[in-house]
Image (cartoon, rainbow, N blue to C red; front, side, top):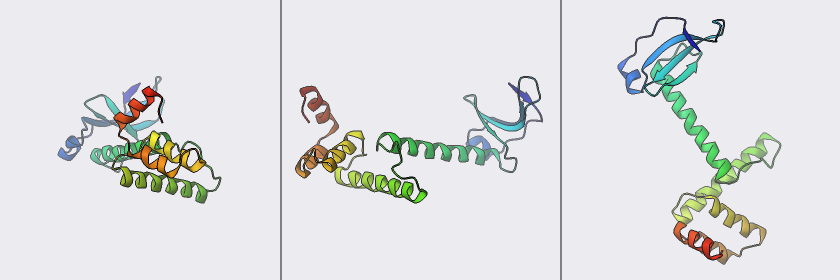
Length: 157
């Protein structure tokens, strides 16, 4: 439950352009004894909660937006590029694995002209494990998404 703990802060034009509708300190708790935090809201009843009092509402919104882009990037790495588990235990090994995944995805994008997807990565894995030859790999990566759907229906590769 949000209980006001201070007056509403005036918003600048830049804050409004960033989507802020109101900015104030609130107490988070049911019984009124929770921490006092700054809450910023946009018109879709979306609340950003922070302890940063030194930044304007506009920057809080921009920071959140950038953080969300980073979250989406890591979700992409985990799902599309099959980067679910780290093969290394050291930080240097994890960075090496991330670099390899990024390089592979960029090479796939340059080669095919499309955003890499799970099937493209699987094709690479089949080649690396010996289940597909280099010619098979070229043929698999040259297919368009519609052709892949048709080949799945007919039981093809």
